[in-house]
Length: 113
Length: 113
Image (tube, rainbow over all chains, first blue to last red; front, side, top):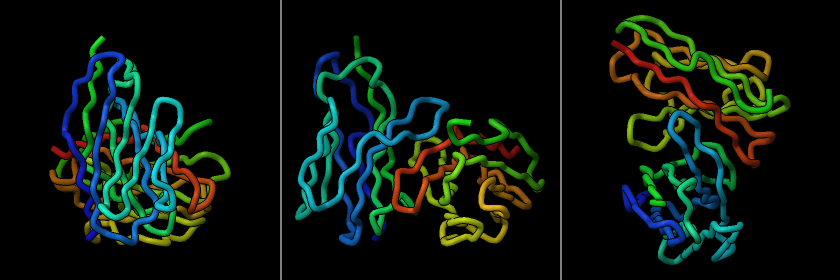
């Protein structure tokens, strides 16, 4: 199965709070798990990515947690800011590459000032 | 330019017409990808080029869709006999090599009336 399931569909967080978005996948052959941020009228932009040989990756305020046995991964945004308000997509692919990415359905994040 | 450029930004066409969507990748990027994003959904893979050849066209929905990249740089996505269901944002992305980060353009919003 190639499906990637993402939740929640929308999320409202107060400024300074933690935003958490979850994804689950079925294909155990996936070996590259990126998160993309998309603003209205723009293309997706790579935020952070992880490969299954590590359980966590942190870049600034953004952290990916990866649970290989549960086939789940999540994005945590610490100290959320109004400028983080965007749509976030998780994705997965084979062969560690950006080709033929399978995207989740997206989470619309709103950070209130 | 510095990023992936797609033209036109918006295209409105009548059902049954032929359309061409253009993608200028980042200079020097060998890999190029086309994705389609319907409203409220994540992007769906269409086709991947490595150099001039279509290395993977498994995402093209039917034979009305075709893409070329004759000189290994600019790519054109061609849609024949357009249908209302083809209405979506068509995204192009490029990466230096097939296993490196992919950068997306802003997309072409196609509306078939």
